[in-house]
Every structure is written in C-alpha cells, then in structure tokens.
Length: 409
Image 1 (cartoon, rainbow, N blue to C red):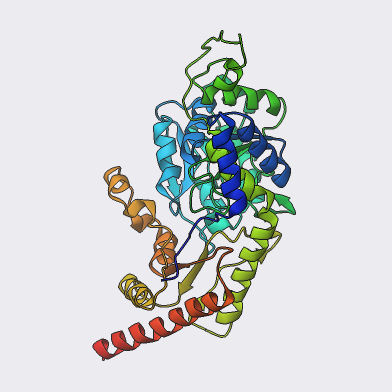
Image 2 (image 1 turned 90 degrees about the horizontal axis):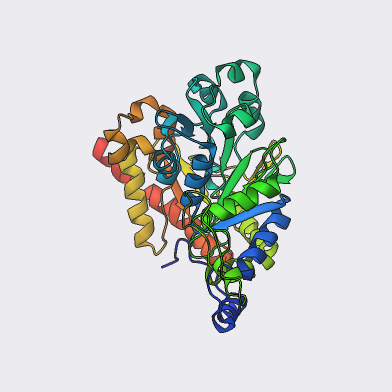
C-alpha cells in the first residue's frame, strides 16, 4: 500500500531530536527560537512565533484582536473545521462564503458578506495554492468597507479596518507576487502538523506583518508572553541560576511549542528547499500523466503570480456524483494506493448544520467536494509509485463509470 502522507523523518531529523533529548532541555527554549528564525528567513517576514498548533495560534490572535460576542469573522465554507472553530473559541461568529473553482475564497462574496459586525477575514490557501490576496486586501482597505467598520476594542481601533488573517496551514513554501505567504496579510498562520510539508508533529507558526503604527517586534513579544500564560519569564530563562522571579501580567494561554517538537521542524527547514523541489517534481509528473485525460481537472501549480506549495494534489473528476467518487476511491484503495478527500465542506458537518449553516447556500463548495480526490504527494515518492497512483486513478474511473453506465442502461 502506498501511504497517503507519511512524515519526512531522516537521520538528520532523528539526530536533532536526540540532541534535544540529551541536552537536558526539552520544552520551549533555544531550538524553538532557531526554528522561528529559519521560517522567518524562508518567508521573508522577520517576526515569526511558534505555537503548539495552528488552531491555538488562531484563537490567540483573534482574542488579541478583541473579539466580542456577536462579532463576525468571514471564512470560506470549504476549509478544515479549525478555521471556524478558532473563531467560535475566540468568542466570534463564523460567516461562511462560497469559494471559486480553485477551492479558495471568492473575494466578491467576502465583500458582500461584510457588515458593521465584521472584525476579520480568514482566507484559506487550500492545498497550498495562494488565495486572491490582493483582491481581499484591497476590499479590506476599501473606503466603503471601512465606513462599515465598527471597532469595539483598542486593537481594532488602532488597525482601523478588518484584520486580514491568512489561514496558511497548507502554504509554507507557496509564493504570491514573488514573495512568501504572509506579505499580503496582517497575520499568517502556518500549520506544522504531522501531515504538513514541514512538521513538528504538532505545531504552528504565526508570521506577524501588521502595518504601522503597530510594532511587529513588540507584538511578537506580547504574543509570546500570551502563549505562556502571560508569565514574564519562560521556564528556560527561569532555569538560568537565580532568575526565578516572575509575574503574570494578563489572561494568557498555554500554547507554547516545545524544543522537542521544534527539533523535528528545524532539521526539515534546513533542507526544505530540496524537499519542496521534489514535491514540485511529483506535482509536475501528475500533470504530465493526466494531460491527455479529458475527464480529469488538475489543480494549478503556477498561475497569475501564484505558486503552490504542492501540499496536496486535489484532482477533480468531471461529471461524477459523490457516490461515484466514493466508489472510485474504493477501487483505488483495492489497487494498493491510499488517497483522501479534502475537505468535507463545513456546512455538511453535524456541528455546523446544528448552527444553521446549509450546504445549499454554497453550491461551488459542494460541486468541488463531490468530485475531489487528493492524491499522495510527498518527497519520498518514487517515479514508479507516481505512475502506479496515476494508472490506478485511470483504471478505477473506467471500472466505476462503466459499471454505473450498465446500471443506468
């Protein structure tokens, strides 16, 4: 069985973790800081804060923004549940909008969803393919949208407009307008979860890019404090002889990353350009294998100044039903290939249906979902395995469609 998304663990990763274990220090310390610096250099944004998950990082940023009950945050209906759950945990209400053909937020639907209660927008880089950030950023800064803006916290008043918070969980390594993700957002949060391009097993990284008059260095320090229960000294600092005194200065959270986790990501970041290049080669091989198949819709890798991080390969099949898609997946699995589906749109999930969301309001999200199959894409894949995966898609489609045609006939 070809696995769907195994983590990249080589000798360098193992050695870095062992070095941490042998150092006598395993929680937040020098390796977390080193990982922050590696990511900051890679994306070109100086202030990056590592936390224990994308979700906790998003909750913290929204709490820092000062969400209150009834405040709205606009998100796409096509995303993982964490995007919406973070808004709810922070005290706000997710307002879902439909997506475009590339699975990403439709900017005009964002514009149309803005009300005086809107405090933030969270565009999602689905599969690692960048959103239409310029359009989204321009809408947030549009004078008519700003006239609707009704700030209810000091941070919101200081910003003077809707916060653009990029859900960059998939897009470490993606490029937009020749820069890393985060340059066209106020804050971007990357996931370092086990299945991501770079992993710390569990983790996230917050890229801070707030405009003036905010100081991003000061905000890094404030948010770092907030990840540690607003304790003025972290455990590493306190451990340096006689430095035990500390204070608690606010209502913080306990969401710091540990050095033991950071060690994995640190080793991977050092070779990430090579790992990313291999992901691109896998992506391009799929494109080549499917280029003459007229019933397959392949995802974009490069388009209009955007470049994918190649986190997922979300293939779509024209003209099939959800039941046919599921049958195709069963056939692919029988051939020894693990595939997946990303994602079940939020309005189709029990919790969100209970809150009143209805998939009928998001037709493009539903259309994308029922035709989507995510193929394995990671550096360890061989060309032979890629060809096997590709042939399994083609043969499974033929078998299922032929069977359904006989039933209908």
